Length: 53
Image (cartoon, rainbow, N blue to C red; front, side):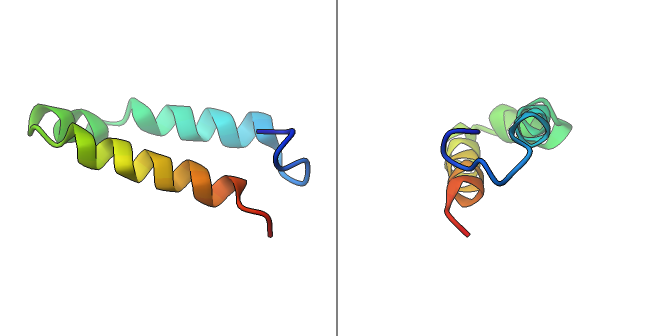
């Protein structure tokens, strides 16, 4: 992440993104059979962070 966006705090952003993966909402989506929805949302979240300002 740092290589793609040296202007952001890659360590903090990375930990926040990974922390969100363990959230109860993510677990609920998987339990409800909506893993693809979760994957899509995570991809978009990461892509939005990596987009150049």
